[in-house]
Structure formats: C-alpha cells, structure tokens
Amino acid sequence: MRNKKKNQILENIRLLSAGAKGVSVGKTELGKTVLVSGAVPGDLVNVKVKKSKSNYFEGEAVEILEYSQDRVEPKCIHFGTCGGCKWQNIAYEKQLEFKHNEVVNNITRIGGVSGFDIIPILGSEEQYFYRNKMEFSFSNARWLTQYEISSEENFGNKDALGFHIPGMWSKILDLKECFLQEDPSNQIRLAVKKYAVDNGLEFYDVKAQEGFLRTLMLRQNSKGEWMVLFQLYKELEAERIQLFDFLLNQFPQIKTLVFAINPKGNDSIYDLDIQTYFGEGFLYEEMDGLKFKIGPKSFFQTNYRQALELYRKTLEFAELTGDQVVYDLYTGTGTIAQYVARNARHVIGIEAVQEAIDAAIEHAELNGLDNTTFYAGDMKNVFNDEFLENHPKADVLITDPPRDGMHQKVVEQILKLSPERIVYVSCNSATQARDIALMKDDYELVKILPVDMFPQTHHVENIALLIKK
Image 1 (cartoon, one colour):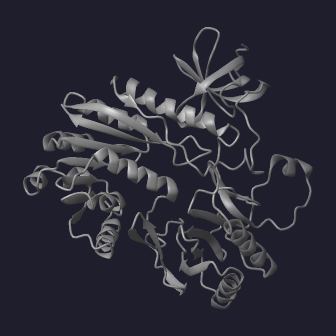
Image 2 (cartoon, helix red, strand yellow):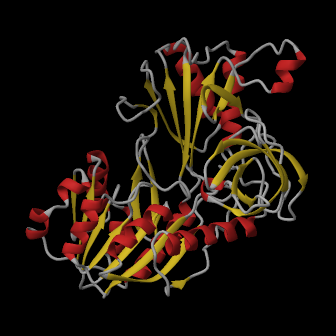
Image 3 (cartoon, helix red, strand yellow):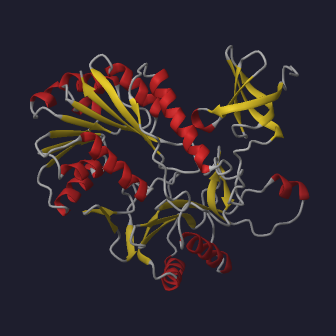
C-alpha cells in the first residue's frame, strides 16, 4: 500500500463480494474493509481511496490486475458512461446470487432475526428489454468523452437525446442504443432525433433554459400499444404538428400521443397540463383479469411481467380465504389492493398522493370491485388511533413503503392494530430489516422471497411474511 495524503492507493485488493448500492467489497492485508466502485466481485484491483474511515475505506478501482471469472461482455456500447445498467458486465446468475445474499444479510444482521425460511430469489425471465417506460432528455450540448475532448476535433452538431450523465444534470449522453425497452423504443427515439436535426428544431439548452424540445417519454403496455409524451419548453404550433404527424405516420404502434408545455426550471410533469394530440391520452393494462388505466402521470410498475409475479407471490403469502379484512399501506394506485381484493372480504388502502388514490378508486370501479376503500394522506397522520377505532380490525396487513421504509409511528400503529399476518413488500431490504427488528418481539419472521425486478442493476425487492406470536 502506497500511503500519500492526497493520493492514497491500496494495492492488490481482491474483491470478495457485492455490497450495498452495487459496490464491490474487499479487504486489506490487515483486514480492513474496502468498498470499491468501478470493478466487480472477483477482480484483483488497485484502489484510489476517496474516503477513509476508522473501520473501512471507500474508493475507485484505478487498475484491474486480474479479471473476475464472473465477468461477461456488456451488450451496450454506452456501458461505463451511462449509469443505467451498472451490472451489465456481471453474469446474470451471479447478479441473482449477490442480490439474494444482500437481502439475507440485511435481514439477519440489521433485523437481528434468524430461523426463517429463505426462498431462492425469483429471477426475471427477461434480462433485457423489460421496462415499459423510458424517459429521455434533449440537449444542445451533448456529453463529450474524454477522448473526443482531447482530440480537439470539431464534432459539429452537438444535439443529444438520451440520459443524464450520473451526477451531472446538465450533461446528456446521446443514446445510439438501449437494451432496457423493447422495439420500437430505439427506433422512435432515433427517428425523433434525426427529424429534429434535419428540420432545425431547437434542442433544449439546460443552462440557458431555452429551446423547443425538452423531454421524451415512451410508454407501452403488454399488448404492444405505445404512448408518446413530449415536454416542450415553448409552443411552436406548426413545428409541433409536423413532428407529431411525422411520428404517427412512421409508427402505427403509437396509440396515443400527448404533450405539455413546460417553461419551469425542472422536468417534473405532475404539475403540468397534459394535452392530447392523438388517441385517448392513456393506455389500458391488464393483470390476471384486472384492468388498469395508465396515463402519462400514472405510477405503474416498470417491469410488468415481474410485477405480476410479485403480486402473485404477495397474494400467496397473504393466504386469503375470502373472509379477511386487509389493510394495504402505501397502496399507490391500488394495484396490490385490487389484486388481493377478489380473495378478501374488504380491503382498505392508504396512500399519501391524492392523485394516486383517485386512480385507485377509478380502477376499482373499472374492475367492478365494491369491497375496497381508499384514503389519501400522510401515512403517519392518517393511520392513527382514531382511524383504528373507526375501521374494522385487519386480519392481514400488506405494506409496500418507499425506500426509506416505514415511519416509526406507522410501525407502532401496526403493533396496536395487531393483525394476525403481515406481508411486507420492500424495495430496500435494509430499511425493511430495520422495521422488522422493531416488530420482532410481537411477530415471527416466517419466510422471505427476494424478487429481481431490475436485471443488470443492483436493485432488488423482497417479500417478507410475519406471523403474530
């Protein structure tokens, strides 16, 4: 190890496993943990230290001395620059192993529980082209590689349509290909880019906040029907209509095309007025006989096929017989609530976002479900003592919180409610484990099932079943 105050290098570090957020984990000769980005488990690397703590280092691999046997050749030419598929160079079987181990380690170490059944991780049949929604940004100043910058060439047109460079919001990677969404996603994006360049349409200037074309969202359903959403910085009616008509003529798969004028400082669509140029302004999706209306602002699981497996397993864990009252916390647009409602006496869903609850109510009506009730409001405020007094006691509670997990007050209310069975769905097994630890005096963790919703990334979902002691 060379130890320099401003440029400390750790040499010959063997990376032994995968850690949180996709980093690789190794050890120094003295046994100190090293968290490394830019390499994969199994690599032998030299590491530039970026942060030094008493019990671990954080750093970046600056030289790979020996490659891991678990490496594979990335499919995408943008790998290493684009931040979307950071595990594309790891064999999928090993990705599943790392994710499975992360969940188990978090539940046992952070949750402080043991003796539960561990069902092997449920992998995704589609390891590429699994997303049903993608968002791209326009820029008049595309990201240049270090090679391009150092070559001092004049690269002419610098318009880009693609992804933000990680950590650099004003820099856009011009995408030539992407393996996340099936065809014709790439063809639509490339056709829009070519048409815009050929016809002199202004790409958005992020720094000056001016231009015409701002963002492009592509959304599809399982029937192969597509929605296209444009955000435009300003209205240029003639240019807009010509672009939209061109796209509709080229791609008959587009069932609806919508747009919004957005002169704000951010790209959020939730406070924008969405206008429909073609079609109904939404798509329908079906899941095991249930119908859902998906609009440009709707939240819906981006991996449809794996989400369906997740819902099926959640219902299986709940073991509903038709007589139980079910609470569904953090219900979103009520997809899980409605999926289980056909097997329950009544389902009560709570969610913070009013628009999501409006959609949940609309979907329940669409599906002819009269045994669901939905409430909007901050979970820790709505799910209080008065709520428990005025509603039937839950036999089964399903909770699917955001990455931060459940507020401690929510956990306390669950313990007061004291349902016989809790099915905890989580996109962050670390916060899930923390919440399980708060309930372990009253509940036994029976089993867990990790689910891979996002192949080629470190993200993993987990379903946990807790039974009242």
